[in-house]
Amino acid sequence: MKGKGKAYALASATIVNAIALGKGSAFGIDLKLHAEVEINDSGEIKGKAENAKCDTTLIEKCVEKVFNKFNLDFGAKVTTTSEIPMARGLSSSSAAANAVILATCSAIGKKLRSLEAINLGVEAAIESRVTITGAFDDASASYFGGVVVTDNIKRKILLKEKMQELSVLIFSPHEASFTSKVNVKRAKLFKDFVAIAFEKALKKDFFNALTLNGLIYCSSLGFSPEPAILALENNALASGLTGTGSAFVALAKEEAIDKIKEAWQSLEGEIIITKTNNEGAKIVK
Image (cartoon, one colour):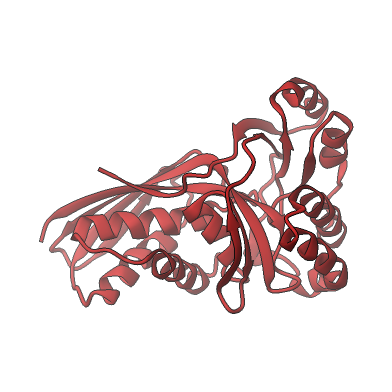
């Protein structure tokens, strides 16, 4: 069999990190990871990422999961290119899983329901050891866009809606932070406080939930909250650590961009300016 499929999925940013509670919230942002899957008869699945240092286990596992779902036995070449900084808390793994699963479905001419596709990616991520919780919240935001509040343990979406159209500023320090290496025990010490942030997210108080969550996880994971505080001082609507770091996000109106950017330039790292995305992942025809 020969077939080719292309798709992309979004980065996402944290409103409430799910590590402490098993429940979380995230929103889609307009940075994309593109995947292309080419089916062949080699019997071997080979992955190639844009960054040569990137482990291809996850993207290969995603193709395998789709093949197994439809009882297919083919080979495939899977390649990814990404606008998303890796290991910074911006759901690069969830985006890779979603994009590859959609591209594989397109290549073999099959369809999966949205939650089936997300769950295959979550399982592949757990098996590839790139995630602690399965990152169902991140995966859902990456797939659907907009904002989601989820129960990651039950893999249930509790709330899903469009996110306010705002600028998203990302401060990405030069050092990476891999989720698989996080001290979960330490993160769970603060779960009662994270529960307050989660309740705010359920009540759609997303800005305060994001800022509070960021301060809590900075304390438990050992990050300085300075990037978030600088953003808030310069008219950000919300700002905090995303994922398990190392990046920080700020939500702001367009007129605040320059002030926040200028404040962050006093720190060492990359600044990315993008926006919220309510469209989600797509198969590219």
